[in-house]
Length: 173
Image (cartoon, rainbow, N blue to C red; front, side):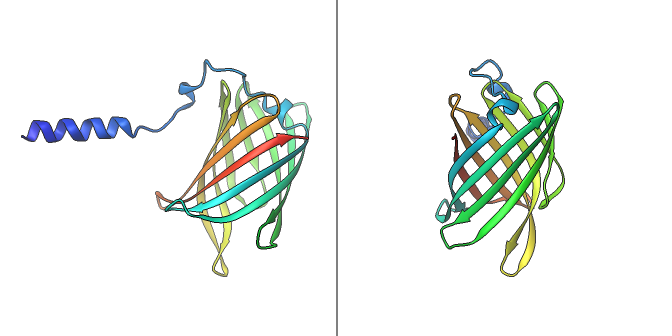
């Protein structure tokens, strides 16, 4: 009986394994970060709580520019409740497929890596919550569908527990 329980638990753990860039490395189109995030973009997205309920909807206008290994992505957010925020990413291409990034509300340095049609970012972000600033971790996955569309799915955690998720569709203008 113990062996059956161990086997069932092992199967469940394997079925819940996390994704890796290795899952996408041989896929195409290859995510060309510098090309895709160069020029005008727009996005529509939702924020969900830990139970999957949509708590906010938003639109984003973006302008990306690159000079050599340095990129800048300016973002203007408008939320369904009327709130407006901005963020300016400063991105550095470290080597082929590897990036670092900073922004005003990012704690430390974001680490990014691409493989195939996927781009993965890990970073900590300060968010306003109930009148104070809270630091959360973002596990950010972007998937280039074609030359004009990227789908972004971000898992938000605090103390290792998932507290929310963001899904965003980014399109070239």
